[in-house]
Image 1: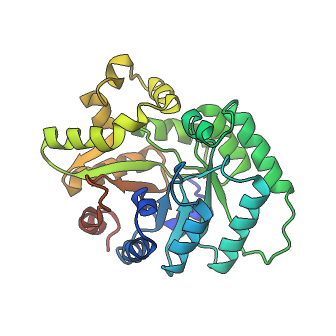
Image 2: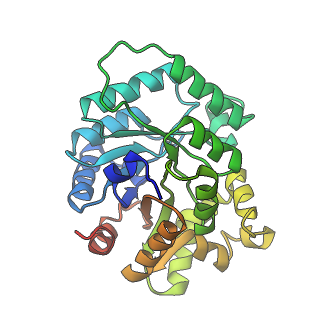
Image 3: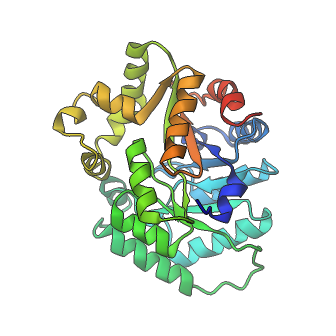
Length: 301
């Protein structure tokens, strides 16, 4: 399969980490530096309605690292206008030798509504946003290559937009079956970089309980994710109580390091170029112990 140039730059496995937006800057910088030293190829982070602003956060993490790609996963298109996003992406990419990757997403109705916007027609909103980015003037120095962008894409239409108007797709909260479907839509070439929650816990009851409490329960309250899961055979029975065992096991790779390696490989076999693992932890921890244990298995470091 022909791969996008980004694939070789960010490697096969990265880290997705929402917790870095909830800790002091000094702690986030130390964590980013260690994740780089562990050999992960990219560090992705989210942008919540009340957390750190995405581009400021990216600059903080870029300044703390030397080689790793720092990626927004995702920057909310409702958080700033397209000209500001375009300017910020160019600024960071040029300042940090092309290590910034812009992930954009249309987010979810409850989050967008909190910002005072009306969530409607996310596909059209994303298309208009990309049009405005492409038309925005920018007079500062430009990195070579120019900053790439990927889209948070679940359904086929958004995946088609990621194929046609971006470097690829960064799906979040998806089973491996989605990765195979996404590759079919993207075709060869565009980057496919799904997120995968992971948990080093071999006790099934403990693993599923923590997964429900700190992962699936929240995302099952967002209609976009539920609607996407229905495409892959999950139904109402799977969406109650924080998720059925079947759903939890599909969304969270738990077990020993080899079990997590196998799940990452399943995404790779289904067509992923890069898998961003998200360590699940209780009590707002950063899960660095899990990333340390997994690094030799997943990155070869």
